Amino acid sequence: MILVTVGSQKFQFNRLLQKVDELIEKGIIKDKVFAQIGVSDYKPNHYEYIDFMTQDDFNKRLDECNLLITHAGTGVIVNAVKRGKKVIATPRLAKYGEHVDDHQIQLIQQFDELNFIEPCYDLEKLSDAISKTKTRKYKKYTSNTEAIIESIKEFIEK
Image (cartoon, rainbow, N blue to C red; front, side, top):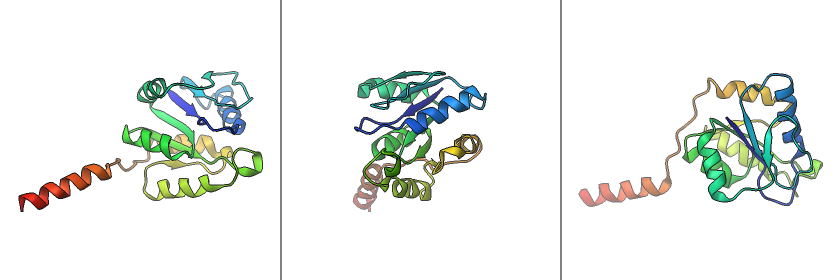
């Protein structure tokens, strides 16, 4: 199952929702898709959706999915990679009224440099990004907290 989320901010992300619909219609996406669409006014035709979910419901859907397609929200990306999920992140852009600026581009670049996600800067290339997730190996997330605790343990043992 593919989970699509656009977050809970006051901005729409119709472009992403429309592209997913288009890829399903063309038969490029064959998996079941479920989306959290927030305040977007585009209503998907080929997959189930809900406007908003509780955190528990979202985490349940996230646990069930094998791929997350999302905006570049730090919280949702970290939540997914902590669970070992493959993530495609695409930025909300100011020129489309999707955010106040283009900071999500930089967030995607940082997560990509760490090899945690598959970036998709251009939604016309979303099908390519989906294909790449099937073969690309991503870095496993390791909590800094766990690393710090391990360092303390090693120090104490010495």
